[in-house]
Length: 136
Image 1 (cartoon, rainbow, N blue to C red):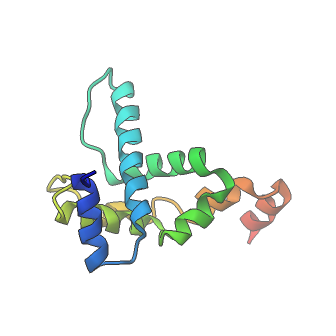
Image 2 (image 1 turned 135 degrees about the vertical axis):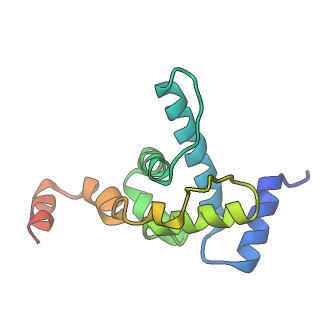
């Protein structure tokens, strides 16, 4: 069986920049598809460009849905520890001409949209721990 173009792109990226596990790129594509579907449903079936913030929210929602309390651990194993890491992957895929971008899209669109700790760890802490961590 021949590898798909997306898989070729992942191989090329990982060869020159091994920061992120190949599975992270596969999940990112799933998160993009998930986000596009959600936006299309919200816009009466009309698709449009996805912003960095929207992609990150879809990424978070899909990770929590698919991986639950293991999301933080799994993402960390893949090299993803903050929103800007997702942005770095997006721009590596853009360089590889797999993802498209608008002139207004920047890596900064992926900075500090949420903290991975708040998104992937806090929802699974006991309520007492959540209260204490909010006071710190």
